[in-house]
Length: 141
Image 1 (cartoon, rainbow, N blue to C red):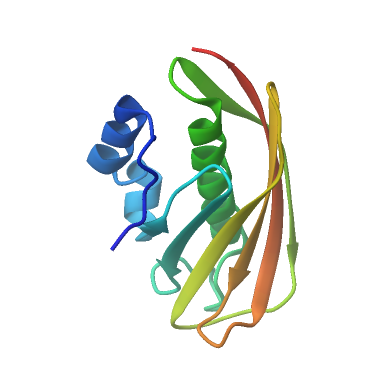
Image 2 (spheres, rainbow, N blue to C red):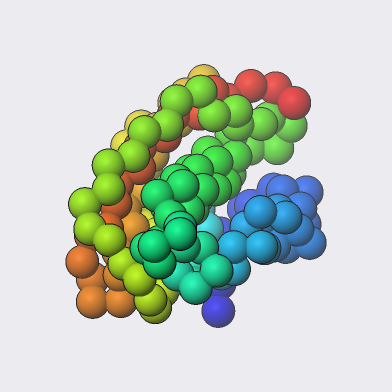
């Protein structure tokens, strides 16, 4: 069950639900569990998202992080506004070869024109796999 705030822009909600987070998120198997400006959570399977030696691809961590950061920033921006990513970085702490990854996005700063989020990816045992930090520019659509 996905937790979604009552005041979420209906147009944004429809785009999220109808697109499953977009074609890339669908291909990668994301499942959204919670969505808000302050905190968003999604899972991703390792299977199908690995690099050649069987480890979860570092780029997969970044895609999950950027997706959660962008959605949270768009929710904060509100109706008639959009979030545009202007900076992202990632630190990979631990590898994983199977199971699921959970990304938890937490707001660091929610301003009128900028939103910064930290997204932590953890394995099923709760161990930190990577940390992504993303800043979005918020502007009129």
